[in-house]
Amino acid sequence: MQLATNQKEIEKQMAEVVCAPVMKEGRRVEAALGRSMEKSIKANMDSLWAHIQEENAKQEKAERENIQQLTSLITNCINKDIPAAVERTIKKEIPAVGQVLARAITPSIEKCISSAIGDSFQRGVTDKIVSQLEKTIGSKLEASLARQIQLQFQTSGKQTLQDTLKSTLESSVVPAFEKSSRALFEQIDEAFQKGLTDHTAAAQQQYESAHTQLAITLRDSINSASSITHNLVSELADGQQKLLALFVAGNTKANPIAKQQSNGPLGHPDMALSVQQIEAPVDPTKELTRLISERKFDEAFTLALQRSDVSIVSWLCSQVDLHGLCSMAPLPLSQGVLLALLQQLSCDISAETQRKISWMTDVAVAINPTDPMITSHVRPIFEQVYNRLLHQRTLQTTTVAEASSIRLIIHVINSVLMTCK
Image (tube, rainbow, N blue to C red; front, side, top):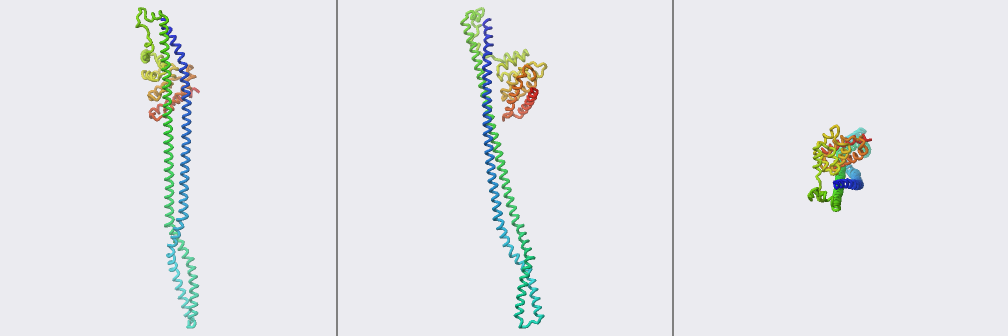
């Protein structure tokens, strides 16, 4: 009896001695992991921003070069092609203008000659004045012809030349220039749209790949830290069991009376506790099943939460109607147990995400943030759970249904945090 009492006292002392280093080491690992994640996120975002700025600068430079090249092409077309086309058009239309002038001037010339000849004959043309007639006819014809040509050219020739040049420009030069300009601007627009689309797609792809790589790195870091924490807890538990076993063995050797008592009143050696029996792992599900059958839900959840094993907590939640328990009045679970249950369910939310989010929603609704027992712990724990839920929602593995459930519980957490202010 004394040995059993000593063993229980030693177990309590060892639990108190071991819990403090485990919690301290867990806080240290969590702080180191947070700093590492913050540095990694900042470095990745800085490199991504610098890369995007560099790509934008390259794209703007290429666009400026394209616009400058197109401007030079348009300038060359205006300076070289259009004057040549106008010159060819004028040369082509000059014969037509000459024919028009000839048709317009010929009647006037014939009329002047007829009138001059008639006047000369009426005055009595003789042989002596034939020469004078020729001179008079020649001078009048020359003066009249020059005056008529000049007048006709100023009136009809100039207008005909302007009309011909205008029609030629409207029919050939202007449509050709419009067509070439439209084609140039269509090429400019097509090249600009294509470059902008390619640049946007490349930037989006780089942004998504960078964030995917960052999410994978963070998930690997979190899984590594979780495995390290579990290994530390298991190693400390094994060390505690070995120390207890060695202590019991030492007491048995040093105290024969205790050895006799441990062998039982009849001296049977099979009644003694061996080191192997002490070190043998105890299945917690049996004890939890017994407490559930006795409807001692608060004790069952307290025992599962003390083991700091999310798998055992998830198993216990699956064995009871957690929604029904959280809806009962009065609640069969204390506020401290509910707050600790919410925190542990959020630790490994990537596994069985939909079920854990449903359990967490029921627990978060049942928590009373004004309870004096938990009022100082509600805000930090709820903020921690809030950050984990935001991280889970950003992962590519999260389904649409899971994202909807996460939005619902985030709304509940925000409502609780508003009441804590």
